[in-house]
Length: 95
Image (cartoon, rainbow, N blue to C red; front, side, top):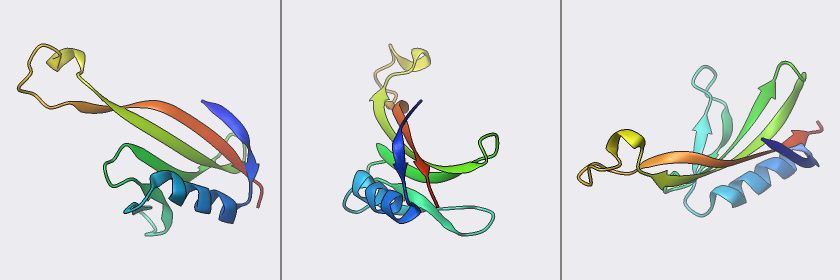
């Protein structure tokens, strides 16, 4: 995990939508129904706003995944590939 800098909530949401790309879908909080981010159409990129209780602040989380064969299915080519998180960076939210 690394923190790249800071932004306002609106700036982070705009960057997150661009990161997830055309055709992205909203990610909703299951408890409140509030929109908390976006996921790409192919599931390889995601963005979400998260409250970090230990720091007492919100952070924007930008995530990129790749497709890999897990150890349990590495030699069985009839099984599908699985996504694995590979990059994860954060931006502190100022407001």
